[in-house]
Length: 297
Length: 226
Image (cartoon, rainbow over all chains, first blue to last red; front, side, top):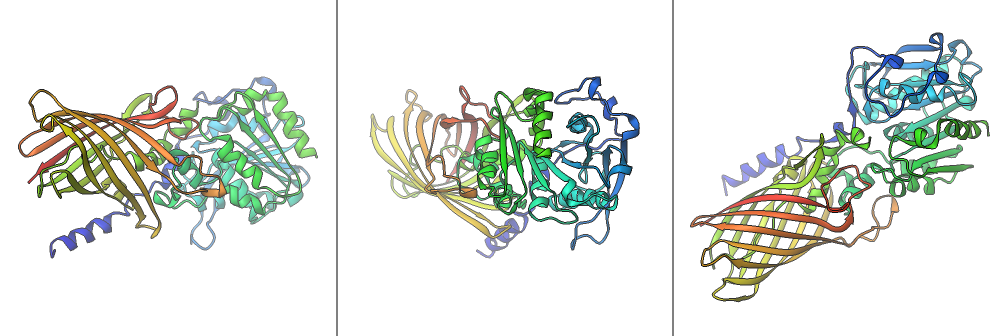
């Protein structure tokens, strides 16, 4: 027994050494952003009619700091699509991308959003969360929220007001989009758009196991969009592919949609669309019209 | 396309399914009265990783004691789970229900409890009962035998996270295996079909199943008798 107890103590001491939180962030570092010149894997590639004039593409370096946690700020990269001098009067879509790689992969999506209600009618801002692309630091849940808020701070400094900010979250990006709408920081988004969102870390776990298993078993992530959405009062638009084989539209998106009790909600369920296929399967024109109508409403 | 989003998530979430699939059948045939055995098992469900199906390398340790010639009690510690901060254990007993031809053929049943407690966060204690029934058959007069069986885990929760209704209360699995019985060591290879009839998509992991249902897994166990 004298030998057994120390052995048990050692096992328990080392038992908490592995966490899987970082695996949620499928980030990829690069040496430069290529945007239109990017030739790697993409969900879709837009034709020339959606091209953005170079003077309307601005790569930015922003300082991001997790409040109450970090003593120093982290430099992150963001891109603004539109006329920066008109932010004080324009409507801006703040796009929070998914878990994969970096802004090059999502460039076509951001560009597409810059064509809602006509080319460059609205500004579009997209950022690489810390650890993604050329953003410094390591990915983390709190860091992701701080990074999106850093964009809001910058937009606010350029004159953007709450009523002209639309926040859009795709997949993993649904977490910061929902969080910062439910619990606003620098700006209060006026509308929330979620594309193929996930309900919570726990539902991800339970979809995988079929068991009622706490998410805490393997992660410290507290993401719970299905719960946070209860605090959202702003108009809400949910899009999800009916063939989403990554995030089940019933257990994830529908749970968020059902829990929303704000002033207005609408949904678009796209037949045949898998995760990442919504704009493509929906058709770019229909996709843009649907978003345009929601934003104008 | 979805695979590209899953590249890292495969590890993150595949571990979870393995909570109910992280070891082969502990014992199929009772050991002798007052005999003891310690074992190490390794293996798991097959998942798609970079277009190749690989088993998740899950491991566990076990100890068994022959209460009688017909009842073996055992306990297991799931070592991979422990690395993630979870104290996952199982305790159970194997009962010989029927045998003939000097034990050449027999039917056995396991009753077990699976417990998980999160040490890192000190929350999330859960217990799942499980049971299985097995048939074994010795090949000729050799001590080696083949076996097959059905296993079920039971989930009694009515609701799961975000107040969603718990969709399934019984998780059925089946297995087929071979035991190579040596004087001191027992080697066991098992093929499992996990989650019979349960669609394996949509999911954050791509399992190798049958017609889009369940997941196939392969396992190896070695036990030392003393």
